[in-house]
Length: 303
Image (cartoon, rainbow, N blue to C red; front, side):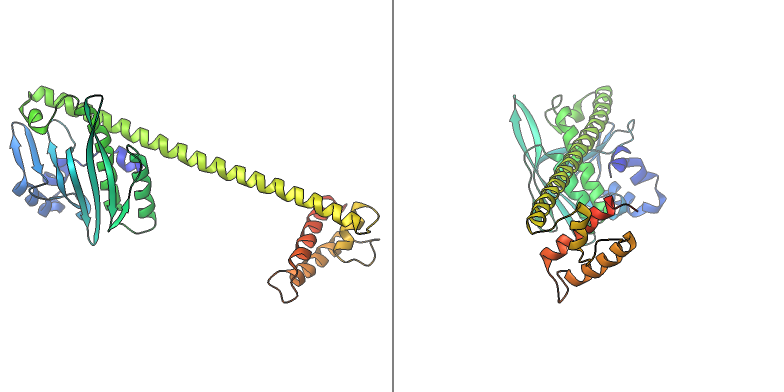
């Protein structure tokens, strides 16, 4: 997913003018787009826009493009941005707060086909992770999830550029050179946002793997303690002789002399079937003793 994001947000020219297979998309863009100076834009409050792969977007945002930049950018506002694809709909609720006198935009809620997901303020990576899970489970199509993820990344980057222009009209009235400079920064901020999400997801994955290892190690330690306890119980039950004798008796050998490992293996399989908890003659405790005795003999019995 992140590889797709790194390619960049959707190129206006690639979508509208250069892709002959998307003539319907081109007509749609030409009908709803406006221009101011060199900037071409579409107000999504007044009309939807067809993205690639049949994904349609509308809501409280403006898509815009400058001819000297390859990408399609988003100017966000408080409200909702809705993405539609076939029967699926993803809705982002965007809100604005003030931090150190500067506006900051966040995702307040994400709704996927009517099911809501809410994460702490600023946790864009959590929404991206959820979208990836929904894509893998087949609950939404990959194309839809990719476009929503791109919008989340753009929103992260958007918080950096609104320091220079308070609203979209100010950007439209700026000099063309200033517009190009800002959009190049927007591109750079998007790349930084992608890198940040990637690192957060990797850190989260590493944390889960570390927790899994700890649980596995604890389970192994508990198992060793249980084996020690079982050995003590076996010793106190009247068994005598070497460690091999004790474990051979658990495996129900009448005589512990001249036993081969092949005989041990054969006896273990028979007893495991007999005492397995799912067997009519099952005995969970006996099954556990048989298994642990065999494991000890398998590791230590001289061949």
